[in-house]
Image 1 (spheres, rainbow, N blue to C red):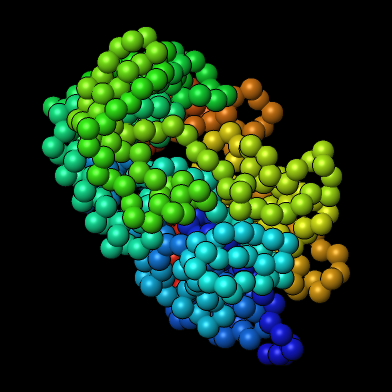
Image 2: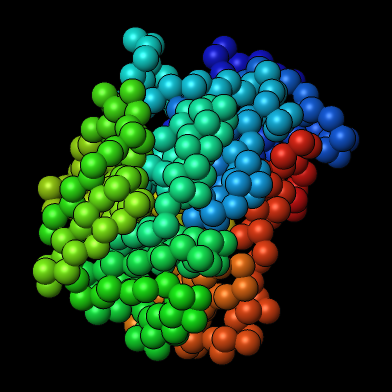
Length: 429
């Protein structure tokens, strides 16, 4: 192999679906390139490439399953997979830096716990969006995660009345999971609007979700905003909330022994409250000046990118953004789409490196899911183990058909396959 004077430096800011999708693509396109590579062992060294994954966590977290994880301890323990269980990440060209990202510039990534900057020739931004814990997952190691989950399991077990505030997809699924697995507990879902699931969805879809919630026994209080919340005991706070200004997931939204007052004057006394009030973006960390004041790099819908997953600005052809942090995920967040966007970004970086400055045709992400020009988006809402409400581009799927399309493990096995857990990846798997 021809050795260049200095290796190409590729940084990936954030792991999980998008970041690991990009890293796996880079592995296959830049490292596992020998004709005899078949996935039976580690790809040979490549001194011309240096890939750095920056992640504050020590593993992959299957976020899609977090609401189910809160109601099923055995399932929860499967949701965090340490990077040490991914042998391909131990490649000599790959370095994992466990740290919090404090700033991204056009040339380097800055870290909270190190004065060292991660310089790059190419960058993939895969930091997702932030939710308060527990859905956002405050832990940085698997052991911390398991300890935190045991506290939640104990609190849920002790509670008789559980309130979930916010009936977006996460809050609605959490209420359904809790009531499914704890049918004797009172589960109350409170939402400021008359129907759940904000966004470009049909009212038929929303009404079907409400029907399933009521069938499960979830009490709904819609059209009521929580205007006051007092908790007699709050013991879920974390010691490391000093970084919560850049990582809202370090703030726990769960409260015990709370009294909620709604905009209608109703009072709800709950032993446990889960606040599921949407996401926050990572714009404070992105320091990438735009070429035009009329077209900022980061808007409320995410980082502006083109179909190649590159930042849509002539100043940054070397920077890509994948998954929820990009504006292509503005309507709804999908793990599968994040993995695919990471794959596209990694493949395109490899093409640019091999092209050595010559023009090259880059791969495309394709149209957005549910973005075929119609009024509505698509969504699969998992309401407990046996119920699914699906809106496709053609309308709401009948309940009997939707139930047959459900994934019992909420696509955990597929995610582990996508991440090549316990093996070396090959093209197509």
